[in-house]
Length: 392
Image (cartoon, rainbow, N blue to C red; front, side, top):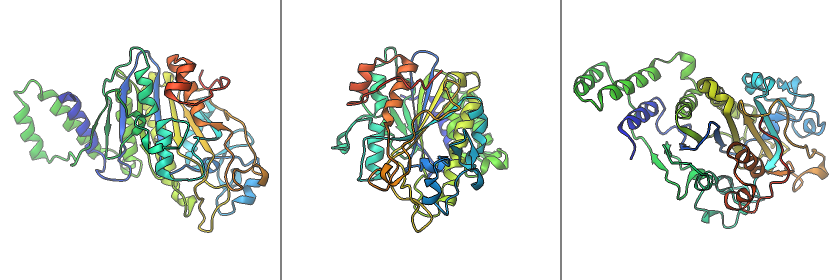
């Protein structure tokens, strides 16, 4: 059962969100022993890794993309002489320079060719090695981790929002709660509630705190009321839990499907991604040093832009890592090339590695999870290979 205090705080934070909006994201939590924190962000819609981390050092990229800007001359920020960071992620450059941001190019799940968002996301969150039958996967890899993590408890394992997070689904206890109304109280209503709660030892302090949080959302500076407001609220709520007993959090960010006018359509998604990461860093304070953020997507986009200035469903994409525990400031994988002979099915970025491999090595480093357990129970069919040394 959720405590009354937790219910009120959750209601207030959710009241600051736009109920039913496309950015109202589920967010799930679980506790685990130790000081290390893990945040998994699912980027729904198939992020174009070639645009987020632009391999402008490959001359073929400019031949394949004419209306989508490429490299520093297109406004992107050079990272290492070969890769450049998308202009809308400029606020993350200090993290790159501090070694708190890195990425793995050319990764994917084992999902191939069908290019369905729904099946791709199911497979990503299930963490299994086959897409057949993907709909029969009933649990997620974070839930399987919890079941096999000594000392782990379900402290506040629940989802906020209307979307189901299958990455934490399974037999390890988890709860969900979807609000149907906003918490917006008039001054008269606040005075009435204060009067009602005044002599109630359980609700007096918690009720006041909930109203203060709601007021904070309404009175936040104008820049907090833009398209990233909901994302910042989710990240603040996540950080608040992670600063307590919670050690694992997951939520999703939508808006990565970029079939049309990609230059414009990705701006909001990129702004939200940077807002989520920077808010986590700010709110976690000293705990950021023990935090690893994984931002994962179901598949990538085609290397050639389409006639609408966008990109279609592809295969290889990129995995973003952030946090004080990350050995960042570098690309953490190899590059397959963009020659015609290098492409997957003649149209997509060739994936060089299973994205589950990097998630597995993060779990190995953070929680000392045995490799044989990771390759069987948590990520069935996975070959972890050599340690890529993702974390410090």
